Length: 261
Image (tube, rainbow, N blue to C red; front, top):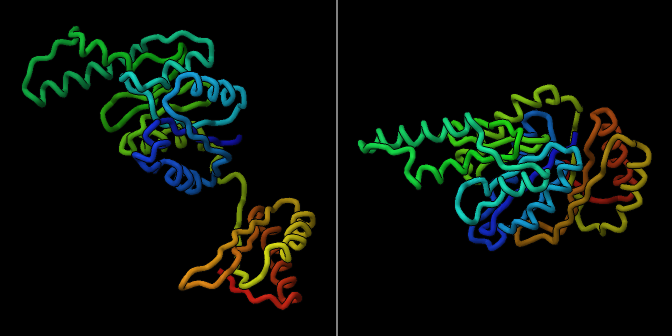
């Protein structure tokens, strides 16, 4: 199954905050022998979020979605998920209890009496309103749960909360997918060679070894590094090893200067 990532928030698109989720998700997946297939960013616009979720719900992909599940006016993800599925928003009973427990604990810590029926505390319950049939994703940080529906997993934008929640999702629901596809990667640096001269080699290797991909990452160099191309293969281990050997042999024939990394 393909795994996708959605990151929601105007603050990311405006540059006010730098996204930390993408590299962390890649790291978490890699540690489990999984790989991210795609990622998309979207601002706090309900119509765009609904349109994006309609498309991803239809894809059948596993989707990790960060941000916008709070109860402030700029949080639209809960409502958008329900709209994309044509389902009503309903108050999740256990989600409600979790929030009320958190409110009570905060009151005890502050030494103040808590009125669960106050307008402020009733508004907080909106964070437990999810698309009908959604399941909870436990939040070990403050007990305010995320939610899961149709292979989509919605968590807060705060890394201290969301990252443990995503790890729980992977370990609870997808352990059977871990390390199922053997994978190897080999690369080298080719110096002072035009990428166009390497393209035929890349095409030939992918045709010869259908279970690998060849990648090319050019660099113009800097004060410390000459112009070079990171050239490599990745995929099924045996074919990746054979393709890499073929790559080195071809570069030797071309008299190209290269260094294995």
